[in-house]
Length: 114
Length: 112
Image: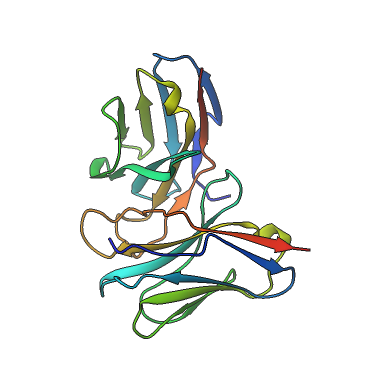
């Protein structure tokens, strides 16, 4: 158990809908990362937050947004969902935003868009 | 970020050492080498990281060449549960882009 909690574990929704994925980082971790893993793309970095502020942005679509709250949990919002958004979404957390600290991943949310 | 090159797949006999190579010939002095693994659709699991010196922990050893252009992850006594995709990642020490950038990794299959 990495200590990173993601909910829900599975989500099935229809095209055009909006969903929210939640991540609770390990206790004391200030940095949260979101990744998407689809069958043909591998693990793709989406966005990073550090202590409530956006730190880095990757290949995140405009239909997607995220935020980190004062209690440090984070949410990833996916809207106007398309079939191609079906994927595993992982959250990771680390003590700081620096590279010398390891990041620990949650078990992911499997999103299926039908 | 420096790119890494890993073999697509490797096999290893159970109980033997698994040696997973990684080339990162364009690595710069301010970049770490990280190793993660992913067991089928589970969240990636941190294994080990290093900058210049060899590192060892309860899971594995990391050997980094003196010129830092390549490294080897060693699982000393592989078990069936070590079957996974192993990712070698180079990560900047500073700057905004300190996220982990995953490549294709090496599929390690431990055979009974």
